[in-house]
Image (cartoon, rainbow, N blue to C red; front, side, top):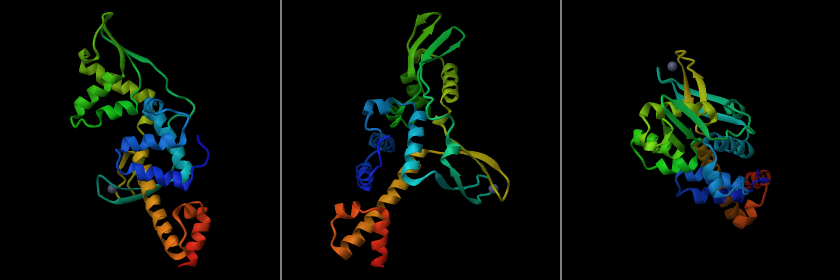
Length: 245
Ligand SMILES: [Zn+2]
């Protein structure tokens, strides 16, 4: 990972990200911390590998403690909970799920790789969930055969697509981070998906708005320029902000 990110780096990234799609934002975040990767390489990271890196980035920027607010699906009780990024790691960061993988069913044989951000970008505009699943699956198929004869991925039966989807989830559990929840009021237990990309973006957005407000206050009080204020450490910015009340 790149050495320490500056406040200016993150503020610039936030500004560029305002007009972008969430998926593109998460790729931009990664490009900032992994400058040694090309955009294509980042797009090709399996979703679990991408999200592990976003978790690490979150730890660097804001620490390991996460806070979430949700409602019980049974009684509507509002739940506030805190947990650590470590609880969201399904596999150690080093173990990259490679590929290709294969699945054999009846006389069908399919070789596939795991879905990545490039695939997600391809299906982002599709509103039909079935069509999106089909398109995603087809872009992950590297070879398909029936009784040894090559066939097109679009000719594979639906049961095989579902089985391959289940197999992908097994291979890359990190791609679907789940938090186990229990309602203190009615004891209902359920699990909720944790989307690190949107969580991190919401935090960066809040952080950027706070920082811009601080810049405004300091520039207004002292006549300093934005680059000078950004070059101050957060602690010193806070000190001057307290002085001006
Ligand atoms: Zn409840």
